[in-house]
Image 1 (cartoon, rainbow, N blue to C red):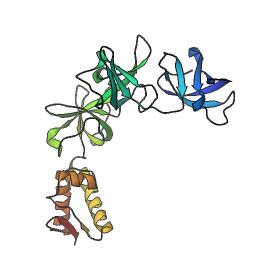
Image 2: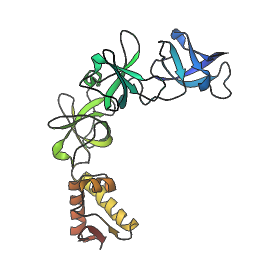
Image 3: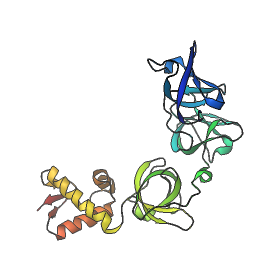
Image 4: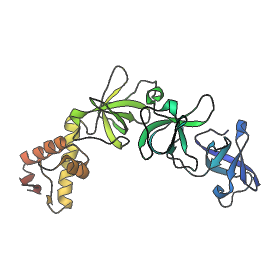
Length: 277
C-alpha cells in the first residue's frame, strides 16, 4: 500500500509510454514517469519512490527526495506568492509545495524562508504546508533526561528567547540569557535538554550544564593545543562566534574550561592566545 507524502517500496506492474505503473494498493496504479525509471527495472521489481500529487491532482511517484516529508518540520524557501491562494515553497521536487493562505501567519514574500510543518489536508488529501506549528507537536509527554542531546530547528523568536522544534516532535525554548548572540530562524542546531516543564514544553541549552559540560571541553582544548603545536589563537577576549566555531560551545563554557586548565597549570595564557605549559 502506498502512503502519500512518504517514501514507499512499490512493485512495478507494467511499462507504458509515459513510464512505469506501480502497485499503489487501494490507491490503484501510480505512475513513475519515464525519466525516473531506474535502469534494469522489470515487472515485479520493487522500487523506492516518494508518492505525491502532480499539478493535475493525480498520484505520481518519483525517485527524487523532497527536502521534507509529511510529518516533518522544516525551513523552506518561498518561491511564489499568489494572493487569495497562498505561497509556494521549494521542497526539492518539480511541483512546489502549497502553503495555503489560511495556514500562514504574517506577510510572506518571494525569497523569504519559513518554518512549516508538512501535512495532508483533511479535505483534499493533498500535501500542504502550515505555519501553525502548535497543532502538530506530539501529544505524548516528552521523556528526556537532563543534558540529553537533541536536534533543534529554530522556529521563532520571543521576548524570552527562541522557540525550537525538538527532535521533530516537541517544542522547547532557548533563553536569551543562555545565548552568546542572536540565532537565525530555520537554523538546525545540536542542543541539550535543561528541564521538562509540567506543561510538556522543554527548557533548552546549546551546551551541557555544570561539570558534565566542562570536563569534556577541557579535553577538547588540550587536544586542540596538541594538534596545533602548543598554541591556539583564542582567549577569554575572543568573540563568542570564534569560540563556538572552534569548539561548538558558549564563551562562558570556554572561559570556565580554560580557568580549570590554568589552575591545574596545564596551560598558560597570553594576550589573544592559549599555550600548553
